[in-house]
Length: 350
Image (tube, rainbow, N blue to C red; front, side, top):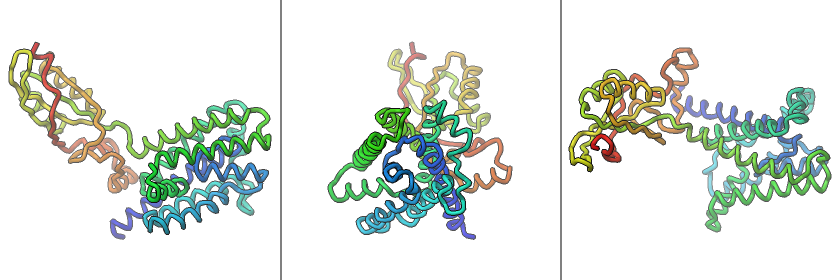
């Protein structure tokens, strides 16, 4: 099988995983709690409540997404692709499967499990938090592997093309409308005897915030690298340690201290999080008076580092086979070189 086909299958596998996690969050934790996320999933839940719990949530999501998808293809071309159709179809199927709404599979009903029912009655906040985390994690995985779940994404893209509306504002407006509409239905139908509809609506806005933050974290990743500027009179020794003991590259930047006007090189290097402590100990052992500035790095592209949001298929295979322990994606045995401008020298010149 070619590398391209393998990569595509790999993407679809993780889109499926993301769709399942989303379905778990929505179908198991949120529907019976009556806390509605925005977009098509929230609108489907509102219609589910309006029908007296007879219309399956997943089926309604699929029925609402299909015309949106067709509209998007007509307005925007095939930019959304088959991955979008696959994403929202898999999500819809998993929701109805987990909730036991498939004919002959009514025995599943994961939402009736003892753990979920306990949280529903005794720890409502934690229940909503779990739902938000699963929703955000699943949607983040889908986005990271080049998929979408249609819905408000298509509406936002069309609104941008036709009227120049900003996608973020459009999605925010759609989510606000859906959450408010669901809150009105819950209040109108008197569906929640224990919790006021307004309280459930506020929970829904908190859910929206938590899930959106998790989406960003999954797509962008955490701060996985650190940059360091080192100002010392023993730059040669420190540079040699960085290259030979840490197996990292370093760049000497010419600098001049403004306090005394002394000229010296400033070392610049990039290391992963685990190597920061080792770096500072090496520097302190050579020059206890060295000035070290360590900063978070958003992204590093180059030898020895993976780009932010990138999952290396070859490394994943090695890990799956048990051969990837110890180093991960950070390439600790490879040298990384970097260039850049530093903040200038201060304390060592005083």
